[in-house]
Amino acid sequence: MGMAFIHSRTNGQLNKQVTRYPNMFAMMFGYLDSAKTEAVKNNALMNDKVRKITTPYMRFYELAALAEIGQQTYVTKEIKDYWGGMLQEGATTFWEQYYPGEEGAARYAMYGRPFGRSLCHAWGASPLYLIGKYYLGVKPTKPGYSEYIVEPALGGLQWIEGTVPTPQGNISVSADTRQIKITTASGKGTLRFKSSKTPQQRMAKSAVLVIATTS
Image (cartoon, rainbow, N blue to C red):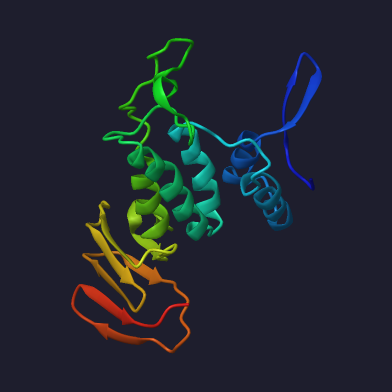
């Protein structure tokens, strides 16, 4: 394995096991330059040889770190496999812990108790946050959203739409593979996206409609 952060130091002794935790937090906190970010992504966070995280709560940080560097397509697959896996197992609310492939009563055990696992864990709904933040792509660049960037990323989805409330009013974004529509009450916004063709644009009083074939 190439460059990656090892797990911990206990009583002066290094635990040289590579886990996802120090790597994802180092990435999220901005400690890494571009070369180290690429190494951590490949060697730890997108490496199936590194032990997977089994709680929805911690998977949020892992996938958020990857979404921060533009890996939405990978994040979408992980959401479908992991949270979708719970749904396929019959979940109606998300569980405190999930091991794909677990069967029977083992799915309900935790903390040394046969039925110690919460099956309606409040920290299990992170796909809502991930998609809302990293797929709609509305980010303030000045306090109070007086200026902001909109950088939608479908991440393999066919379309997305949602509204971000701000002190300046709502910013609504609708995007699919052919067009992006933004509606906003005030503030100064900058739209960023990739397109294989020169986009066409229509302006309205409180909205911008950009038509493009995105790449």
